[in-house]
Length: 236
Image 1 (cartoon, rainbow, N blue to C red):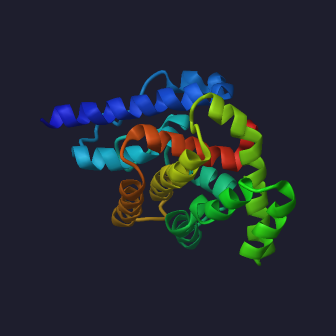
Image 2: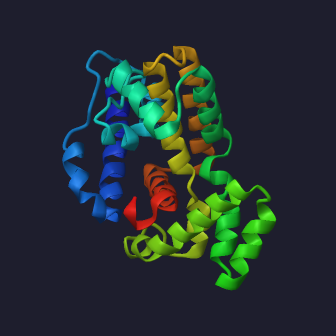
């Protein structure tokens, strides 16, 4: 029975990879990275733990990292370098600050306002965002996410990431926050910023968000791509 559960998880992950590249064809140059699933042969997680770690599988595979264990296999030096360069994480304090942000808000906190602005005429969009976000930095992020969503909308719809505004609203960007929360927590563990128990606490938090947001891997992966599109538009 355990083997069956593991196969189901791997099948779901493989389906997620397929959808990821089907709907983001401009990342085709990265397909070689996904030519095989990277597994830690020394790890033997339960099916439940495997599933939870696998919420960060897309990000893991982009870095050719393990998808089935807390250690990523990248090593402390590489993990520390990626964390400092991409995330501004240098120590336990900055690790917790970033992970708490991904857990408690992330792109999810901006999306309702961004979606509301996306639905109206361009002349009203600035008012909506500025009324919602007094902080200029938050307003700037929201404007950026809106611009990227508008830029990538046609490509996302052509590839059936979402087929209506209602579906876009339903899916949202939670998958993006979840995938990054899991993998960044694992990198923080590799770098020595988090204990094993602390890392699992963040993974468990990500799983709770996923359970409340999605019924299947397909919706999760679509949400991941929506979030990534908010981040980088057609150039992500």
